[in-house]
Image (cartoon, rainbow, N blue to C red; front, side, top):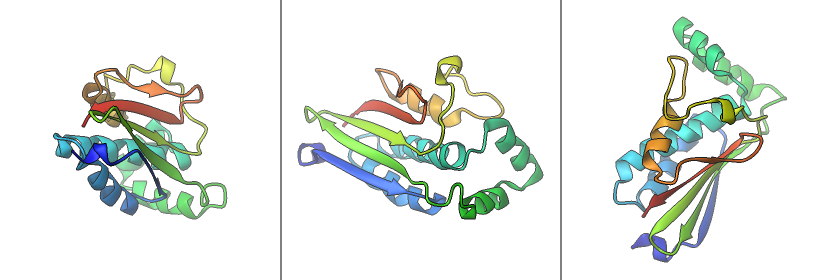
Length: 154
């Protein structure tokens, strides 16, 4: 089982292009790798868009309706306020049969205590809902809401 040889790994990413290779590599450690890959990709995308680039849910929905999300991501990615921010995915093996996955960013966070992570809205929340369904112990956030952790079977 791959997790027996893995103790801890940290992957840093800045753009959408960085997500698929990292999510695929980490997800391969679990028996339900395709589902985990989708969940990790969603959480990592949240870390970039909502976290580091500070694109709120309503703004993202509006940009998507107008077909301008990619342009806004490119603009903010080159803006000095956001350009040097990184997001990360940390993987830690727990007793050889579980993985602790932590996705974080350098944004200001969000008010996770006021959101039902299991119920996405039209303007967002799909990544958190998928992650919540996959994690038997639920999602764990830091106080600021810019780090989310979950444990999954490996």
